[in-house]
Amino acid sequence: MIIAIDGPAGVGKSTVAKQLATRLHYRYVDTGSLYRAIAWKVLRAGVNPSDHTAITALLASTRISLTPDPEAPCVRVDDNDVTHEIRTAEVSHMASVVSAIPAVREWLLPVQRVLGAEGHVIVEGRDIGTCVFPAASVKLFLDADSEVRAARRQRELVTAGASVPLDRTQQDMDARDERDRTRLLSPLQPAPDAVVIDTSALSLDQVMDKLMAVISSKR
Ligand code: DC
Image (cartoon, rainbow, N blue to C red; front, side, top):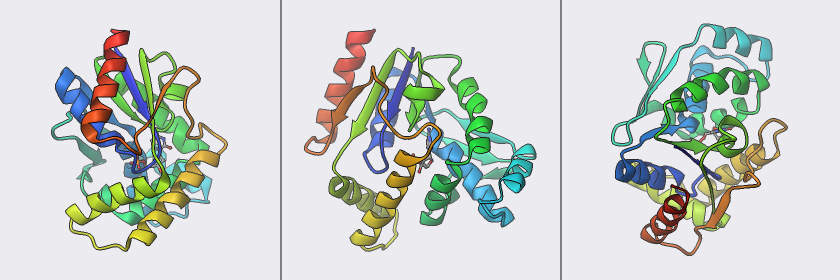
């Protein structure tokens, strides 16, 4: 069984996806971390993301691996463990930029499909139900108001020790969402058969209850 969880930034996908994977004893694949890994390499190599020839050449010499463990997801690019470094604001921005490049999406498609191939997996992203696993058994799309998402993201940043003003967090997130929703290839949108859940007014426990109810009804 493949469970796809899509939705915009800051909606709380990772928190619920990890909890679900732990509860169901499933593997957990955060596809955003793969886009972040490429962004990390682009930044480190100093490649201009509008130079698609250079991006294609960079991809040809790139290896990415991900440990699909919800308790300790680990991302490696070539020989570097980038698990923590890919969480900066700079990498978030670049991940959204490189994710609009067709060569990047094409390169990551088989990587994601291999990671999900064995089943018993929760796959989180933007286009999992529409493009990566269109035949997933369960498709969930989480959404929430922009203010609520910015506040959630802000709490995560503060917990991680960063001090960024809330309005800046919201601006960055809104810009990223706009880019993710309007790109030509696999834009962020619910699959026609996805269950859409607005989490704006729900606690984490309430979201988990709703998701478990949907999953149970499909098993
Ligand atoms: O989920 P995240 O914030 O870590 O994702 C980082 C960026 O990667 C996001 O701005 C859009 C892109 N992304 C994507 O285009 N498709 C996916 N399946 C996952 C992420």
